[in-house]
Length: 347
Image 1: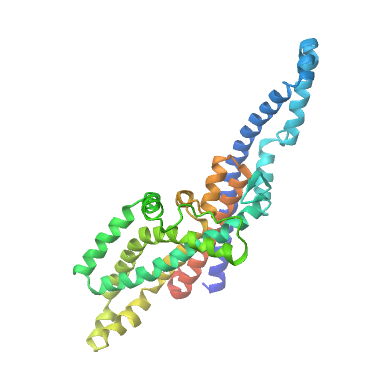
Image 2: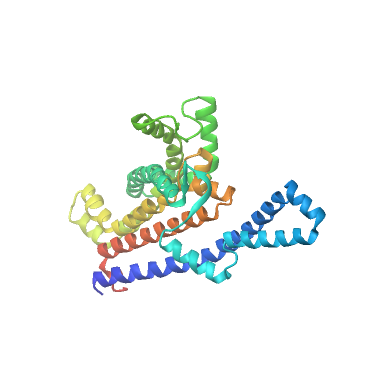
């Protein structure tokens, strides 16, 4: 199979998945929006019914009051598009979402009302935090993983195994709260909230944003680097037991060249794939982590949307997150297929 055909199949499959997921999610959110709209219609009518003029109408002519109530309800149903069939609304929502027409939020978020603008503000902040963290995690994990593979079964290897299990078992939100308590409230080193000062502009704003990012960055790296190092260690140990490594050592090739020139190169496909998935998968953010630190990224945006029942915002964030994940999978598949041609022919 040619590389172009391999890439085309991967993109086509991803588009099918994206359309299907968007359709399924649209069914859910259209139903939620319908229930929310019915509640809001009832609230509007009840509030308007307290108007003195309406109260007098109700007392003097109950039939006219019921007619007013029915007409007003029908008018509001048209405004909320509840007069259209359910599946027509689902198809319309799916189409608009695929075309990035997410609509507006009911109330401003991050100073914006348009959902696409809100997401545009959140994505760079999530990239700044989680992509930076992923790069640091990858660098530390590779160094520790390779060192542990070289010392398999020895103290360094056992220490890394314990460290990986310990850090991987700690919930990131719990570590975040402990770090906030220790470094913010007790020691006063870092700010407790990661929300930047809105009164700052230009360089001062970005300086403040970067300073507030330090504590959540330390938290993400602390919880994640052990697991990544252990994964690298396992991949390297498996590769170092291959025959070509034994032959290289028998030929007297220097150990550093065996490790970094032969073993690491052979182990690069799964390592690079995991790095790419980690980097691009981080674009979706982490809901609980961003909520704990009040970091204004995609995760916190989802949290705010859930709290405020912002259906359009939820739909937009869900779609963008799924699209980014599928894009990361395509890129990972392409890189893997390029590094290991056997994948393209299904071997």
